Length: 121
Image 1 (tube, rainbow, N blue to C red):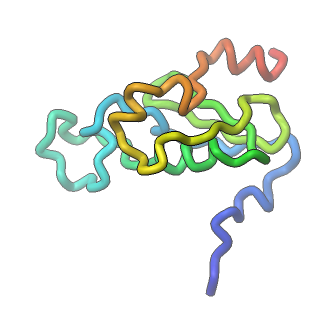
Image 2 (cartoon, rainbow, N blue to C red):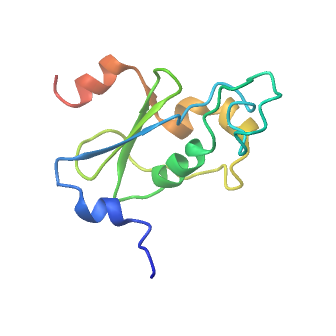
């Protein structure tokens, strides 16, 4: 069976959202790939590599996206809501150091009040 990796967008309503958590990890230790390796400064706290998936979506011209700078980053994807246009991803190897230096631009970091404003609230 072959799964379409864009399946969720096939079923998303025109006014819908896809919401992801952990898109803005606070450190490289939090963004480690292996949860079970917890003898790190981050200990049991872990966000994994969600930021990489979110950054891939940020490069898609048909998707609007932003990351609310709350908790460890709440990524929001939309077909039609004006959240933030696609970017030219200059972090092609998904290096954490590049993310750390360019978070605002790469993730389109916004405050919750900025998100509400962009949605007309």
